[in-house]
Length: 522
Ligand code: SF4
Image (tube, rainbow, N blue to C red; front, side, top):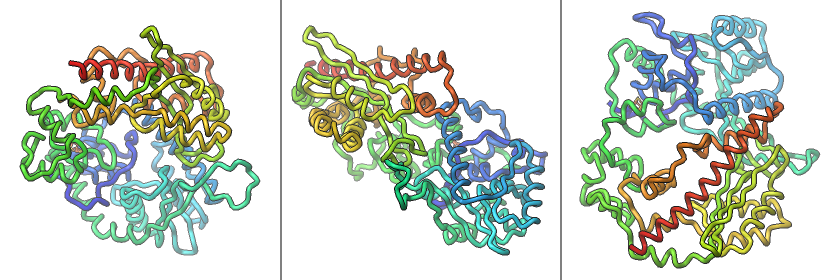
């Protein structure tokens, strides 16, 4: 059965590698960490596989983006400790659970005011508290998050910790989530007074207390479930919330093509309500369901298995002014910002590629990639203005580049006029596709990832070392913002791979416009 608990119960943490404490301990005994409990609340089948197949290939973290997020979380945790003040760090290798428990017990006996990574275990569940603060006989549990706000899944995460600590006899009277402050700004001068701190501490005690009311029952269900055969859990929104389940390939293999959840811009709750009422695909929708023009086009294209091209495509393309330039940015958006005026996760362009039509029918190419940790904005802004000089329409795919250029105009005021003039020439290609073309292969999405293979089969990113925007961003972060000295050979290879990736992004747009012109004139 699908999980039918309220939203706050569908929570979890970033997938972590399983720790020895999580391994099955025998036919009738399982030990869980907080992370595993969270996975169980996302989906019992997920937890069952995690515990019964700890070596499953799906659980191996070989995704650079996931590793980067974990590293970033570690950095955020260390900075949070600096902000809260001095304390005792329970610092043992990951698998030395007993040593962690003993050291924490010792620090508690000595009346430590503040303990970092305080370890507790009760009734088979192990937790490590990011920050445990003592106020006389009472304690506050503080969970540090790399987010810029409290998310629903954080409440459950903290509740598990409070539950275990209380089971251990610790009087926890307050619970907080300490997250990055979205208003934190890297100062233009470090001596400015009254700067907001990097973190804010939010009291989540009332929500946690409510959550705790039925947590014990849920935990009992999880332990009982693990003793039995694999539970039957249908696919649903829990496969994606709070994060993508690693076992998606196993469960979604039998899902029908054009599942109802792939209907263009359908709300998740509407889609899964329809699915549970037996409307499995977008071809079985109830007649009373109101569809947008785009969704109707999608249903028609899928029903007839043909690509639909609206007559207005020709006029939309005719509105483009030559010579057309094609622009793509890559950005870094570190959790802990480094350049003045930036907030946590502010996306700063550090690379671009521009292809421009030439009079002879060919294309010229221009690219730029930052070199190191120096603020790249003034230099990239200048290079960008030059690269687009003389172009008529400057095409991008999605509004991402426009938002970044407007932000650059604020951050580099001496170039604001020229950047805003460039902004006036930007044209988003995505709505041109969305409003005029639907191919059954789009799957309800107009991202380039879906559109390109459907419209230009011969164009492939497969031969590139970097073939994904997230990986590009991770590499850029590592290359530009790393504190450790870089390996020269590795950096050169990364640069070459990043340049090739960004260049293909704009070349893909060139080919897409060529294809759209063919379709418009067919
Ligand atoms: S894919 Fe969905 S149903 Fe399958 S284990 Fe993961 S969350 Fe559960």
